[in-house]
Length: 328
Image (cartoon, rainbow, N blue to C red; front, side, top):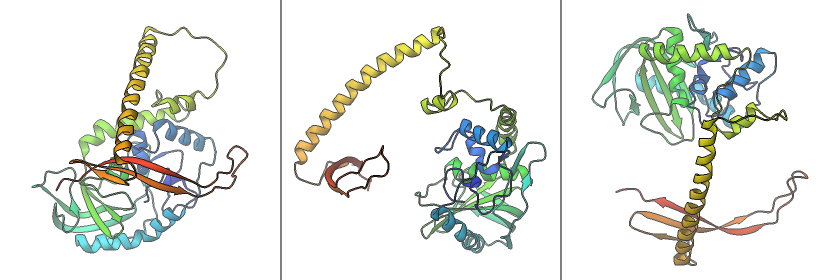
């Protein structure tokens, strides 16, 4: 329920009811490549390793532990605010999709009695997939997903913060509505979703089927970035490859763009220098649209951590940044 990398695989994570070698609803965002903390190939390697008996669990941290402790309180607050008839806080059984190798753990189940929900900022109600003048009717049993985060609230939470999770849980359970209750500090917001059969058929099913086929042999997707490429091919085999015409196009692009990047960086550095000159000893300055900050920061001495990371003396340095001013 916290915004952590791989929270569902932590060894003592609360609510983990499903096997690590299968796709769970909480990591569908990884399969869809919308999680900024990982990508499909990382998730694929984890599932493959788990299938082969490797322990892929992680230790919990304080943020996760606190989030788990707050789960019931957040759920009860959402229950009261929404006006649900009942809420099931202790869910001990996983759910499974009727035809896909896909499972999930539900935080809570709620029961509604023909409630019509519309966007209401005062109540913290949001309907990300509906127009402002539309609403949804929630009736009977539904899914209540709990999140605690320090990330700023948005009109719609990012897809990796529970959205694809509850859409997948609805596909597994057949339930028609879900709400993500997100607490940031003391600000609780509830985001409501209806089941989307078209998304399940056109997006969820083909992606999960393709991903599951790749798990046994760890059949990687094309790399998503240079780090991913290095992870897939960590060492060379000493052989020589004849590159394609497409490769030559990429070589030409890199050569051209590296020159352009250097030229642009030189221009940026020159403009920063002029701004610093104008600020002088001032900590900050304002234009009509931006605030320019050149603040002194004091860094503490750091002890030697490893032979590779030597000790550092205390030092002082000015930090430069530009921030756009909020519109009145």
